[in-house]
Structure formats: C-alpha cells, structure tokens
Image (tube, rainbow, N blue to C red; front, side, top):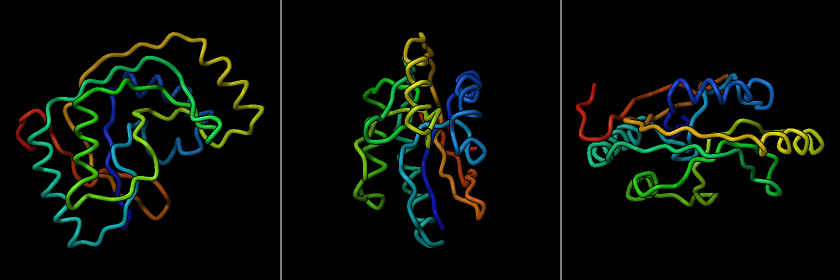
Length: 173
C-alpha cells in the first residue's frame, strides 16, 4: 500500500488555499491542502506497524510546529506548480530529517521546500497568467500545528488519514 506523511494547516489556511486549488489544482478532490513531510512510499502491513511505532516516538520528541505562510511561489521552470511558501524553521527541518532517517530512510527525490500546493498541471500560458497575478498578492498567516498524519492512498487515488500523531509532548488520542 502507498503511504505518505503530511501536516494539515488550520481551516483558515485550508480555506484560503482551496479558494485557488478548486480551480488550479488537479489534485483538489484527492487530498485537502497540506504540507508534505514525506513523499509517498510503499509499505506492507508489518512494515507499517514498525513505522507507526517510530512515528509515535518522533512525535513525542517533536515540539509544536510553527507555520508561517508568506507568499505565493513556484517551482518553475522545473514544473508549473504554484504554492504557498511556508518559511523553513528549525522544528520543521528537524522533523523532516527524522522522517527520512532510520527505518524511514530513503532517497528523497527533491530538496525539502516547505509549501502548500495550490496549482499544478497548468498549461504554460495559464501558469504564467495565474502566477503573474498571484505573486503580486500579500499573503501572511502564522500559526502552530500540533500534529502530523500518516496517510494512505485509496484505489481512486485519494488520500485518507491512517493515524494522527500529536507533537509537543501531548498524549496520543
């Protein structure tokens, strides 16, 4: 089965992101606005039990995660993805590192750029027009997130939560 690890921002940020995603993101119906902490990976039932145990340990040792969204940005020319830039911070970077070491070690395809995707798979002309307008807008959200999620992919391509991990020394629900 295919799994991934992400955190979901507040409803306020999700609503803001969705106001663009519903028009510009081909994955709009597959997953809510999120910040990917670990790209999709395959794991069987036994492996996922080990991973869940490790994620509980990581969560217990992780502080609440500050999120500061500051602007629209893009991965152009690599891809026509438009996103909300999340400013890197030590807690987020450390969490990302831990989610890519030990039993979770892998060869990450990309450098970690914290972001919330709002547009993808746009034709070049539409991308240029949309990004040209969005990058002029002021964006500013600040909050803390107290959990991250292990997700799994359903047959229809959508993602759903397998387990939630509270950070900051909070008791697991």
